Image (tube, rainbow, N blue to C red; front, side, top):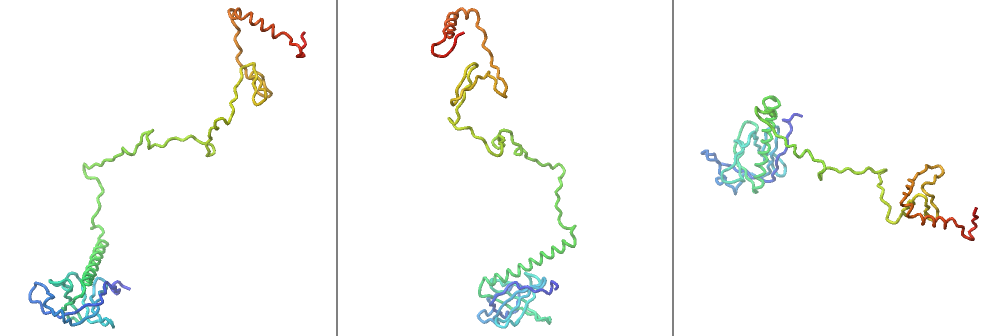
Length: 266
C-alpha cells in the first residue's frame, strides 16, 4: 500500500455547528458577530483525517456518519482554513464537492477546548509535513547539509588540566599496603597469661619446668646439636688473694662426707 492511500485520523469532535456567511467585502477578515450564531444551518460531528500530506476536514452526521461536506487542506494557515477576528471558537473553511465547485462556510464549537484541539491538530500535521520535506531534501543532496568542523583554527590551542590526575604517595587517597596473610586468615597473639614463659638457666645449672628437670644448655642432647656457652674467665691474682680463704673453707666443707648419706670416702 502506498503512503498516499493510507488515511489516518487526527482529531474527532462530537459537536460542531455550520453557518452561512456573507461574502467578505473587504480584506479586514471575517467576523463571527455578523453570522446568525443562534440559528446554525447544520450541526453534527467533525473529523480531521490525513492522507499523505493533505489534511481533510470532514463534517459528518452524528448517528449515521454520512458525509455532509469536506474541506481539503494543503497548507495551514492558508485560504483553506481561516480564523475569525473576534473569537477563538469560530473558523471559516473552504469546502469542495469533488466536481470543482467550492464554497466558504463558517464552523463554530461550543467549547473553547474543542476549538483549541482543532487548531493544534492541523498545526501538528503540517509541522510533520515540513519535517518530511526537509528529510527528503537531505537524502537527495547529502553534501548540501551543514557540516561539523572539528578541526583547529589557525592559532587555536587547548588546555588540559592534569593536576587532579596524579596523586602523591602517602596521601589519604592512596591505598595502603596490607601485610600478606597466609590462607586468608590473620594470626592473633596469644592472650596474656595463656603461656608460661620459660627462663633459660645459665651454664652449669638445672631448671625445673612442670616437674621435669631441664638439662643445662651445654649438655649435648640425643640427635641434636651441641650449644656451647662461653666459659667464665679465670680470676686474676688480686681476686684470688682476696677470696682465697673463702674458697679454701668452702672447698674443705664441701669435700667432707656428711654422716648418713651413704657416700664412701676414698
